[in-house]
Each structure stands twice: as C-alpha cells, then as structure tokens.
Amino acid sequence: MSAEKPSGSKSGMIASLIAGALLLGTTSFFGYKWYQTDQTLTNYEVNEETLMVEIEGLEQDLEDYQVDLENADLEIDDKERLLQEKEALIEEKQKKIDQLLRKNRLSEKQATELRTKIKQLNYYVAKYETQITELKAEVEVLKCENEELSSTINTMTTRVRKLDREN
Image (tube, rainbow, N blue to C red; front, side, top):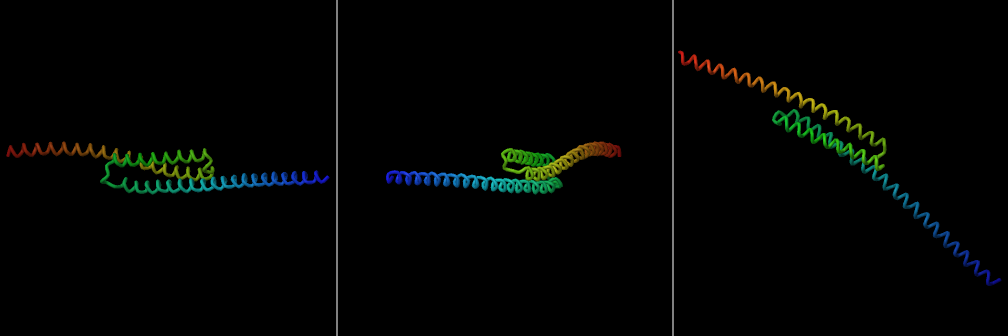
C-alpha cells in the first residue's frame, strides 16, 4: 500500500501542474485578446482623429481657396488648377474613409460623420467650379468688348488722321 500512495501523490502533482499550465495558458490567451481589442480601439480613435484633422485641414484649404478665388491678381487657370488639387485631395480622403471602413478601423457612425464633411467640401468645390465657369464667361465677354473697343479706336484714329490731312 505504501507503494501506491506515492504514486497517487505524483499523479495529483501532475494533475496540479497540468491545471496550472492550463490556467496560465487561458490567462495568457485572454490577456492577449484584451490587448488586441485595446489596440484596435486605439487604432479606431487615432484613424478617426487623423482623418478629422486632415478633413478640417481641407476645410481650411477651401476657405483659403475662397480668398484665392476672390484674388483678382490670380489667373483663372491658376484658380482652376488649385481647385482641381483640392478636389483630388477630397477624393483621396473619401477613398481612405472607405478603406478604413472595409478594414474595420472605422465604425459606420464615424464613416458617416466623415462622409458628411466630405459632402460639404464637395458642395464648396462645385460652388467654386461654377464661379470659375462664370469668370471664364465674363472674361470672354470682356475680351470681345475689348476687341470691339480696340477696333473702334483704330477706326476713330484713322478718321482723325484723315481729317487732320484734309485740314
């Protein structure tokens, strides 16, 4: 009997070691999962904050662009080029929002909020495109008037010279 008792204490010790190893493994697994979840939440916050900062930067750029649009010294082609650059940046941000949403780095609510801001920016881009189109039309009208006035001046100058020769 004494031979069986030590055998039982060894098996109890082995069972305790196995239980301890399982407990340690389970604790490690759940700790790792908690860490991953925490990192994911941090990534959500960082991505949303980063996008918000970038989109607010675009809003500021468009406000600055309004000043450029009203700047008479800036050529219409330059105004149009600047607007196209802003439009490309907005499109890039839209793609980034979609990408982060697909990768589950943004919630649907966050994506909706960001898309709302993008729609507002697109509204201003469309508004500025309309203003540029109007400015181009106005420039064409002014060019025609300028040519007509130049022609009238040439005609009058010719008449004056002719009258001077006659007198």
